[in-house]
Amino acid sequence: MTRLSASDHWHADGTFKVAPKLFYQLYSIHGHIHGRTFPLLYAFLPGKSNDIYSEFFDVVQQHISKHPASITIDFEAAVSNVIKQKFPSTTVTACFFHLKQNLWRKIRDLGLISLFLDDSQVRIQLKNFAVLAFIPTDHVIEEFERLEEESLGSIN
Image (cartoon, rainbow, N blue to C red; front, side, top):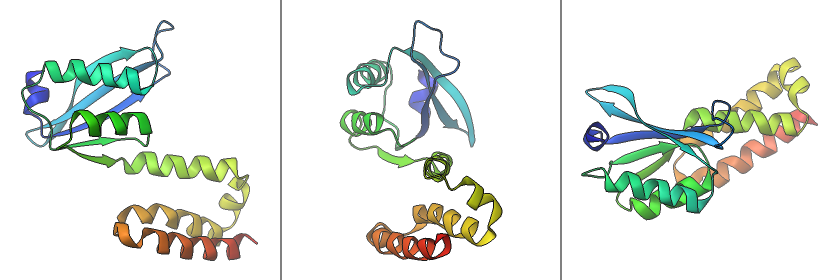
């Protein structure tokens, strides 16, 4: 926990496939130390609710001497809410890998995989949605609507 306290930036995420049957997930926190990222904390958690994450981060807080400047997480609302509550001065950022993973799931759920793979124009249009992560917040809705309009034209 000393090294976790020394890290100004954390990456936190859960994984489900490796958790023993008694638990729901293995949650890990990685920290930046001297320009490198190391796994610093592992915990088996029984679920992924606000209450479970709240209890987990309460225990983490009891064993660290300072809060990180930032934490990168996936798009899980419960984790985001709890971190913002427990670490109010910490900047919470979302992971670009998870954004792209969520976009791929949406493409799959909409039945667009064949079209995505077969039509380079559709592929480019749909991949452009990931770029929204780099647009200033006050322009995201406008750019999303523009991309949506262009994409619908490509798909129809």
